[in-house]
Length: 214
Image (cartoon, rainbow, N blue to C red; front, top):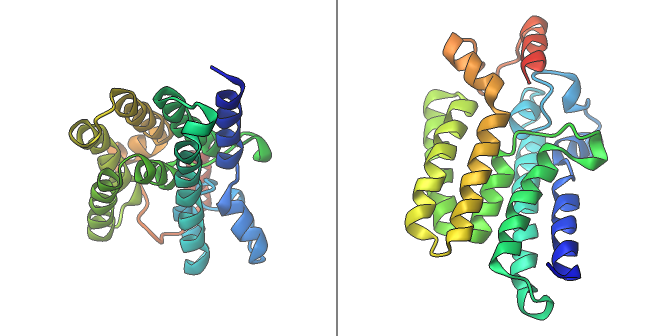
């Protein structure tokens, strides 16, 4: 791995470390999203504040950074000598930056929007299919985590048919595993019938339980 490859991977991590839930909330004079609801710095938790615009900007920003990191690596692959393996690493590392951001004490979000952004750069059709599954389930069942989990499980299967590069398929599989891992508390709540719905404002006791499980 040459110096440019290392730089690309490091840059991807730093881009991923930009937590738009926190940045948007600060810019709009809102409470830190890590201080209410589930404590997760993501669009769904920001929506619990009642500020739909802030939640939409968070969703867009988190997806955009995932797309941007991979797009930049793809754009400069020839002049910098970046291989498919490096681009696959960039795809995974930008998600790790979102989940464990260096700028925010390594306490980040669960990665759904950023993962969609990464997929959009690697395979737009894969991203659109997964996003469509999420939207249908999220608006139908009103449970964001369940919709995200189903779309996440489907993503490697869809990528298998649509992505010709095996290393990219491997990256999608790793991304799916990371997203599932970050949703472990949600999976437990779903099994126990305790998972909140989109827009719900959980009680203080529920928030504490979710935070402990996270």
